[in-house]
Image 1 (cartoon, one colour):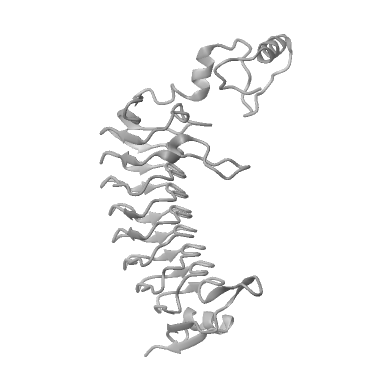
Image 2: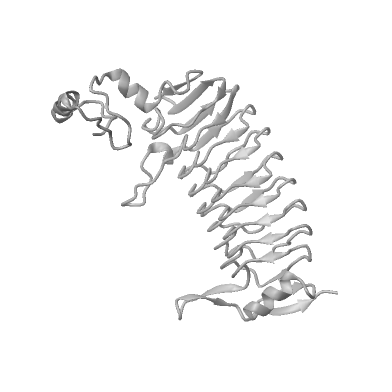
Length: 319
């Protein structure tokens, strides 16, 4: 029994009567008890319009602008937001006073069968966020295909996993100083992303954070301690990178199939997982293999030398 349709079918009406006569508790497809005394108010409760009583939204059809006003955090909805089906919202404006953007707030989602975005946020070109926003939830802007650039709030401290994943036209982004950890798949598959300015306080780049992007270069700060699994996988335009002193861990496949031909690994690195460097795609064998021309520069007796020996990669010891 599905909720959410604007008009209930005769089938639903009959089903409701049967439920009311049944001695059993009947649940909907989401596992929630079905109320036989269905009303339009139930519809609103299920959509979650009363979940955020301190936040209102409105839509201007002339300018195609979706606006939010209010105070406090935008809490997460169980299934979808009340504004998920707004038609063609080209602009999104969040007013000062709102402190958190909820999970999947403006995500276009994706159809599991066709792989195409389901909702009209794929056409959103402009998103304006106030400096009062300190947190952005998981997947908040995923699949916003027309978004090319966004100015993030200066007080932002928390960016959720996949917040900007699959934003096909996102080209440049500057992360505020408060962002010290980059979540999983944060910018993955942003296939036109060329420039990212990290916070000088960045400590961790999460799993697949920049996977399959067009990043040409990125400056890694001295505060960086960890690079996650497949973090830069498929970044073919990255031809050189400077790993900072203080870096400790490099995850599996972190620089898989990148444009690197060499790398210098600092002695502070204690752990390098499988296939982190020096692997490329072989079209003839249709699989990844060690790049025999790849060079690792490092220090004797360190994780860099051990990794090179294990993978059959040329190692040149630093003085």
